Amino acid sequence: MKKTLILGASTNSARYSYLVANKLVRKGYPIVNVGRKVGEVAGVAIEPAEKIHTDIDTITLYVGPKNQEPYYDYILNTKPKRVIFNPGSENAELAAKLRAEGIEPVEACTLVMLNTGQY
Image (cartoon, rainbow, N blue to C red):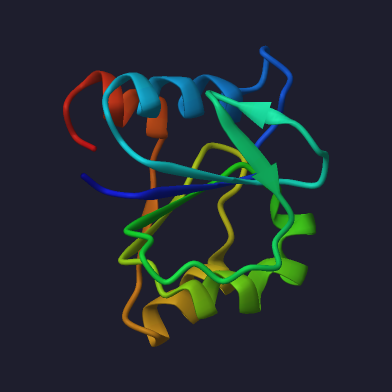
């Protein structure tokens, strides 16, 4: 199963990152929650963007483009196979950096991908 890092994880049940974390776990995907606030989502602690995970298939972004730059190195050093830019997180600069490193940028909604079997 594709291990997924949720960047912008939130304990707020109204946030899409919260919904995605729970849906991924229900479908059997292992997750890593990364966010600014301490807490737990879908039984997995939210950690700061410090530890580089080397076994990530997908990063799904829930951080707006204006707040992404501090995470560029973290994302690139994680070396995922793909990064999903959820609606509102699209960023041409980061997408170009990803492509340069052989990482696939995907503009899509992770929830829709999960619901339609395209994940």
